[in-house]
Image (cartoon, rainbow, N blue to C red; front, side, top):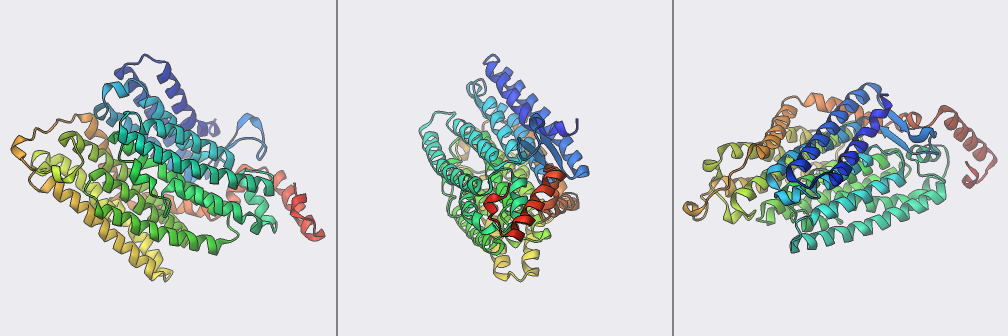
Length: 519
């Protein structure tokens, strides 16, 4: 029964989405179905997180077919954490949407589409097969494109076209990499590929697949130089949808890079890590420069998504247990903080009718509670102690210095300072300065549906900052699993199958048989 828990974060959102499609098209009905489904999915994800923290790995072989011949779902500590945080984001956005979205949007497609999206995100985290990862990516693409254009405005269709165009190109790279990999290895099960590559001299033969998949995952993650679609599209939909995208979608790409380049593509480690390091630093710089140069709140926050992705992949490039643990900690922290900031941007937009900083102001006096709620994730994103962002940046910089990557550590600190500068620009314009023609402005009121998820995320940010050892201890255990791929292999494949592959590889190497003859 415990193993069957794995399927719930995928099945529950899909069931809820189908019920929503069949239910009466009324805002209240759709809202109740959406929030209830997200709440149930989040509860299931917490149960999985607690179980995997004890068991280490949970594996579900669908249809009773043993891996690698059937479909495998695998949850380790990294996947369990990512599923739990993504379900939390889905629940928060569902609550926020009751106040943010017009009733016509909530009564039609928003909740079913967002449930399909979160279900696909969870499927990406727990799949044990690369082709199924591709399938989940495509479901995410379809759902996110529909959500991006849900308002039927010109800017949304323009942003949606850019988003789909570049992601279709990424899908082509993904498919090409999968085709080459399957032709060489005869399987797309992650554990099976990792096993065969670990016992055979076929490692250099998969470098082409490794490069193609890195391009595909980099597009999904928003790494340099494949990031340009993100700031051109994420700011166009309603704020609730932007928050859902900003919190989750790029992290799926980051997760795919972490998973594949610790489990499968480990043969040319120095080259891959050097490439990821260069891309990470460029991503950090380009993202923060874009943020400092804009004067629109949502655009600034969207550029910060890019710069912070660089920190996450930087931990993988350094490739020590502490560095990878820091990257995992950073990823969880950023999902919470970035979603929160984009939700707050939605409240600001609702109050002023715009995200243009020049047309805002006086919110410190008019809405002091909102100012406090913004200040917490703002300072956390900038890395100010004792909030969660400080510990995430501190551990990465500390590890870079211990490895004598002085330029890397210096750039990480500079980007942190520039991040804080661009965030204080939002603070001074929206909250501190006097609004233009303040006496003529009527601030739109906001209900508790908007403040509840924002307050929840703020409390969680403060809690993690004051108790970083809880999340960091978990992240270190997750990093240790990533650095021990044999644990993943043994959790998925049977002992008999593993022994058969190893014996066949030994015989092939002894007799100088081609790797193509391996089963």
